[in-house]
View 1 (cartoon, one colour):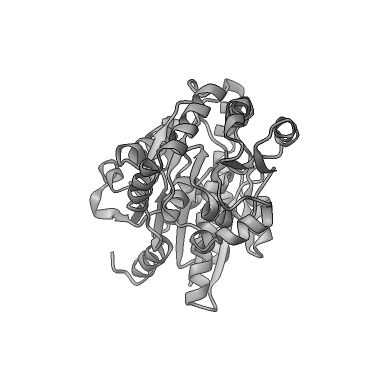
View 2: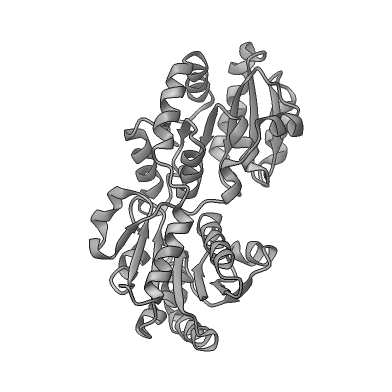
Length: 366
């Protein structure tokens, strides 16, 4: 199989594409995968680190931009289309898959115009404007949430779930305890805000530390801060008696999930899919500036399913956070119920289902 995987910008778009690429290669050893992204996205760092090919085109978003930036975005549209068309003609893919991000639009649209098999992934509950447009011309739409069917032509939809890293559910509690010097008999809170961190969450945790002091023999925290806030957050922990492991980035996410009793994070689609795959209870703080408010809509699906508690970014503070966390510490039965509900949202076979759909598209099934 020769496949183009288009999109990027954030890890939430890139890592599903990598999971799909790996699944294709595992099934067909001679498969060729080409990623198409932009120079401004994380794909320029992440994709090469996985030993995969990457081509760049000019593309940018238009929503919420100043007039000057909007004009620039409009002016580069023709160039992006020409670059995408050249890449497609040069590579001659069997299928083009859009995973979200600026490069997805022109690349998938060009492929659809050339009548190639095309598929897009919609990780969020509510689709962004690019996927709403692309859904009109692609052959297949792979969605995460069953309830997202309402936004698409149901004949095109496959409910697959989001691809997550294969090892995410294979973490070791014992290895986490060893790696990070944690106690085996403590309630473990795992905090992260994505690969870049989340300043409001970071600040609120530091503010909550004095409230946690009386639980210093019961509580421990694993905290991924992101690079920008690492030093200030680390300093906040240094004056606290709470046992902790603080790092700008955690590679061993599977071990962190395995040892955690409760997860505190933003409500990005991939993070929620990982939480569900690991069957974890969570406190979700949606990023308030996400396009189309998609993080709050994502979170509401889990909250309505009894799998999570949602706290708005506006309401988040050290005091409210401490109250929520200690409340869970005192009510372990509530956590157990949330864990049971969380696993119901798990779709650990998502990557396999998506590649199955790719095979059907290429064979002319649809």
